[in-house]
Length: 84
Image (cartoon, rainbow, N blue to C red; front, side, top):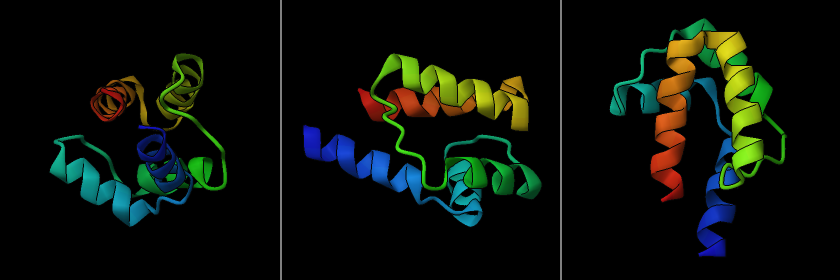
């Protein structure tokens, strides 16, 4: 299971705005191109473990500042699906 976690966390640290937009569409999360750019810039290069509740909460708070609380809630819902 650890390899699965590593793959997901690695993907997050290298995600692009276009990929975020694609995932947003795929998982019904409303996100604009400027929001996707800012979120991707924030995530790029960070070593975040979304399987750790504390780290995931910190990331979601930052996403809420960037894209708004509703988008952050949806992203958190998506993260929770990945972590189960």
